[in-house]
Length: 145
Image (tube, rainbow, N blue to C red):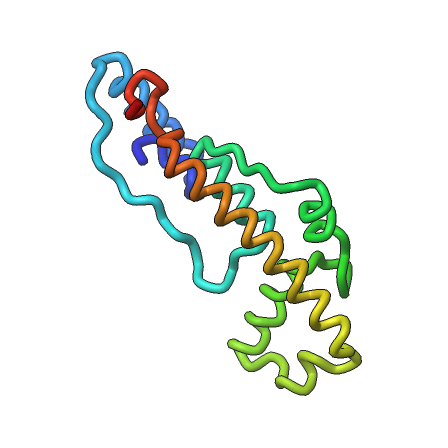
């Protein structure tokens, strides 16, 4: 991650990283092996997944009904996955109890929350799987026939 665009940097450090990347490109140096950071545990929602996909240069394709369902506010002006993330973090940090987490929520609404979340995550995983299986991460001329 030569350019270090995935982390916060002071303007001077950002310039240093950009110049290092330019020198690397001008010299036609090979790209070193790198790890892709997974991100903070429990802090992934649909916005984070989309941002991660963009960082990878990956086109995340989710069907319109599933995309609409994950973006539609579910509770507290949050979409389903953002709500799950918020509640999970609140429970993990002891800010709320299990009783508070589910107060005023019917079984039907919990099933709906589960369905919207699972449908979205299933399509995200399927999309990444197709990308990997079809070698989309490689230049077209380097993909196996």
